[in-house]
Image (cartoon, rainbow, N blue to C red; front, side, top):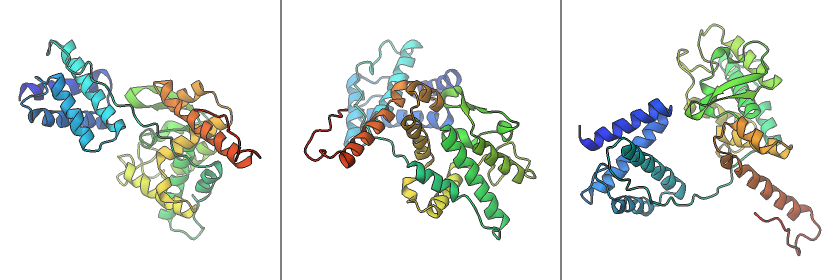
Length: 310
């Protein structure tokens, strides 16, 4: 094993052990470091011997590949963490990434559904009396998943690993382990608890540890399997499947809470954001909605400035 490969392995071990990085995060870091190493190789450098100019060349390569500013910023964050780790561990005497600037990420507004569209999705999670047991169970899965995603703002990764006993009893709060191993409590609506309870009863014979078991009951449902369920429900509800994703439901949860007067700090806690700056993107959504309301309903909107600035 080369020195560079050994450094990468130590870095990934640190991320897993000390920061509880998820497996997908570790794979992304590994890919970012491999991309950087390949670029450095073209100028006769390695990750262990890289110069600041060598790293700038890698960033230029990413830009030439038309990668988004958000992606470049994320990859640079990994590289900065890597060289800070080498410096702290005494594996390098300097930090070549210290003065590299991250590109400013685009401020893309999150997509979300209207409240009536969410209700249409939930109403579509029903099968007629004569439907097969498999279709009826699929409808129960869809209803329980959508209720929980929309009522609690869960990430799909958090939803699919919920244990079967997570909603046992009459509890009103659900304990969720989110990114970085951080735990938070989210509220449970009566309809979400009822939908989950109906699914648990239907799956009584599966003996699965998960609330949403996969084809193999010993494992949780996959993201791909849930995407197919959401696609079918969207079609039944008359919604364009391209507009639907678990994250759209999470965005809808946040947007609708703010629209009904929720506090931004409380929303941060419910969503499990480490930094409130991440939550503040929803204030831009609200500003845009206000612009549309004024433009559509104010009698002077065609000739007057709305006065609503970003």
